[in-house]
Length: 567
Image 1 (cartoon, rainbow, N blue to C red):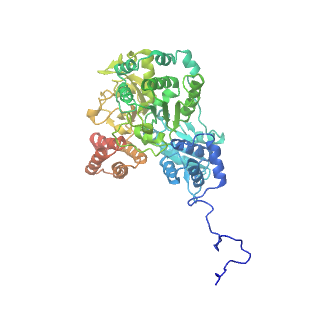
Image 2 (cartoon, one colour):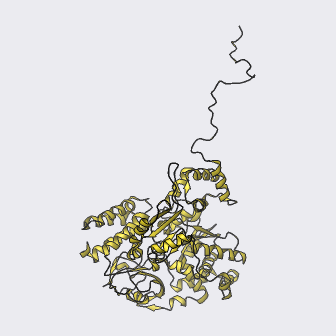
Image 3 (cartoon, rainbow, N blue to C red):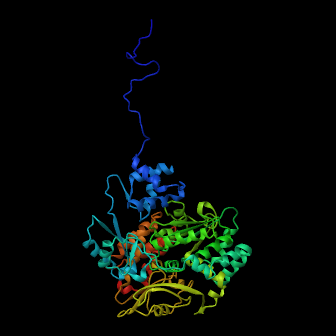
């Protein structure tokens, strides 16, 4: 008997099915529009779709649209062939990226960030922020509190778009908005042509032709130069550590000057960028670096533009190959000032500090040996190579050798950067800054950023240098000196510092993440629970992965020790 023919009348021969046509026309997961795909393709242009460039690509989107939508993330994920979750995690780690989900409203076109660091708070930042929030239409302008912008000498400071307004007032803001003045203003600086005319880069050329890197390293060591980002490690020793490793090597410049009260790197870069650049290229020559990465904080838009222009000049002059200096833009994360977190960010990832060992001199950028230096350190490398070690080691004061760039702000008459002997005391620093501001009486000072805590005015004879402050429970760090007067309270200053650490903790380790939050709550009480705070400080100092959590207890401990009457 023939099989029953169940094929519909008129159906074509061959295999067929009676499905309902519900097959997928797209991959599973969040979809994106053709418009988003076209926009991402346009923004990225002919740039290589490398994973380490993710943060640079996120900046392109943020700059163009004022936010990063879910549509953008989905299209970028396909373009870069990485997961959307990976992009989302990276973007939301950084304060300067505004990620907007499908059901959320994008932020207003204009954002004002009001600095709330210690110097700005002392200058009235909270009142300024409230006045702006009350006086501006929130549907048109967003007002946010933000961490230190590296302009403590002109407090209070705010950033409207990418334009920094010094000694800010609501009237100045209204005028900037009316004029659509939201872009960075470049200061006058020494260009490549001017620097070269004064003998710039002659030393670099000489070393490249017939230099001995070990001789240069010896000059750096004999000068006494130590890392000026805060750690104070002898600078020349790093070169040998990196050189002993075979294969590709890199140099990474830590320009993420985020410690509140610090602005010395910006001071030098906005005036003499090529002194730094020549020092960097000399260090790169010494370790035979294949590429130099400059990681510069996003809060320095003028510096970023200066470096873009002057790097192009170096390329055009034939001093470097195109792409040899890779300028990377941070995105608002203090933790990326920690060298291993910076390297993670250079690789396009969240800036989470690495466990060590291995150290970055062995396993750094892309897991290759990496020489990491601070901006000011390389500034002095250039000076030492041109002028000899004597430019540093010939200066002595109070038993200390060398020079320090002190960033001075707070209740002084003339805040700014002052180059003084390394053995200078707070009395010398205040005197260099024109003395105390009118009507102010010296009460306390922060010797090296919030990580160093506070010392009372009575301790005014300590040389502010490496190794001299440790016996007193503090350190010089990046020499960010903030001066307090009788109009300020130490407990409020310490609370400001801990709030900063609470905001900027990367959250990777519980002692720091939960400890900073708990400390802020305890410090807001009328009377501090000192025993509980000391227990908390002990755990944070012992168990935190990096220096943020380890140093965060310093403001608490020093206030309890020296200003017990306030708590």
